[in-house]
Length: 298
Image 1 (cartoon, one colour):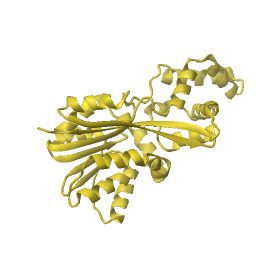
Image 2: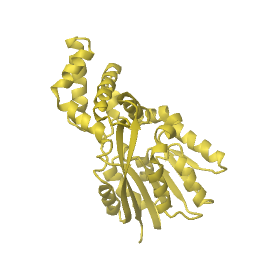
Image 3: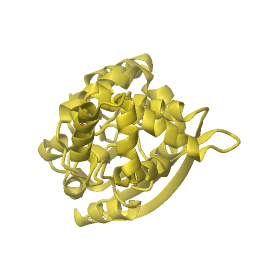
Image 4: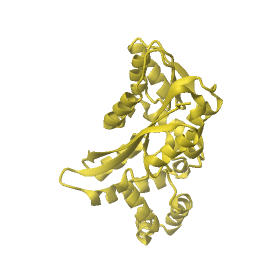
């Protein structure tokens, strides 16, 4: 992914830090617990948690490797503060690093870690370049554990995105949203067409095997891969849109170039579109999450 503004990503996660665990973490407990278990952590190991977030799973890993050092890396200062407070509440200590994951990977000392954990960060880095570099940081016998959404995650939103960017009806909806002002509608349409017209948005791996291949390119041996599907339910399309915005899931630097009027239009458009997926239980959103464990054997 060509990251246009890492500051936008940072400010978004600073904003959502207080509610992040309620909006996101509680929905992905199973894949996170599996990753922690499959890493086979041992006491005394040195571990780096890239994009540690609020430290929910950083702290769990810290318990398992204590008294080993845990380095918690995140580009959001508020996320790091939450991780620090959570660890302190458990009587644990983290070494906090305010940095982008790719920058930390680039500057960390070779063969300095037994374990690297990286959970839900690939949307914000050039993962094809970063993943092969992780192997350099591992000691012999070290492991990398990775969780990521894959391209077919949130298929309901992706279907709408593809539908709207190709449909003349979107322009008509924009005209009505603009109160019949052709000039206003044209300005918004031109803005969003320039940003989203080519279909590129958040670029994560097509599947977990693609991520595993990049780890292997860095000299690691893939031990296991898996894919989980998690269905979330919302009472309305509007609630689903609020979740994807407020959880930070739809955090792409391109959105920084959309003005407030355009964002209101997109929220209303997608809220109405999500209603077309309604089932008796509510409006579904499917998360598709891949996991991989890779080892340095030589």
